[in-house]
Image 1 (cartoon, rainbow, N blue to C red):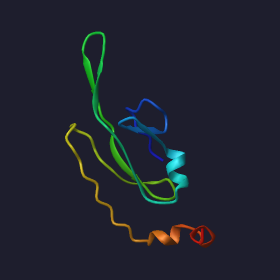
Image 2 (tube, rainbow, N blue to C red; image 1 turned 180 degrees about the vertical axis):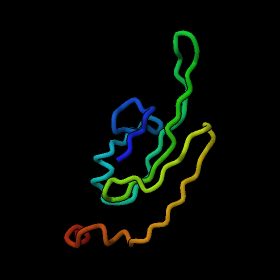
Image 3 (cartoon, rainbow, N blue to C red; image 1 turned 90 degrees about the vertical axis):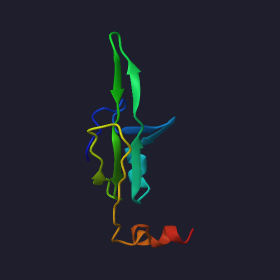
Image 4 (cartoon, helix red, strand yellow; image 1 turned 30 degrees about the horizontal axis):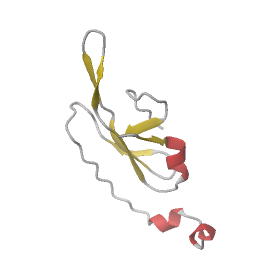
Length: 96
């Protein structure tokens, strides 16, 4: 699994005030979009800009697609899901 280099927390991505931990996202057994908002951090000499972009994880926790962040402009991720999502959830959980 790839790690977002600029993120503050290991294996965590933030969006607003929410924090998505990768293990929790992987346990959901679904494709999930995890993104990190860009912002500025004051430093002693200057203001530093940060931004991690976004990634899509499959049910196994592997990165299906991720953005490249040469700029802080908005990006769009498009992924084709070839496997029906109901096949990813065991039958006994579908009956609940």
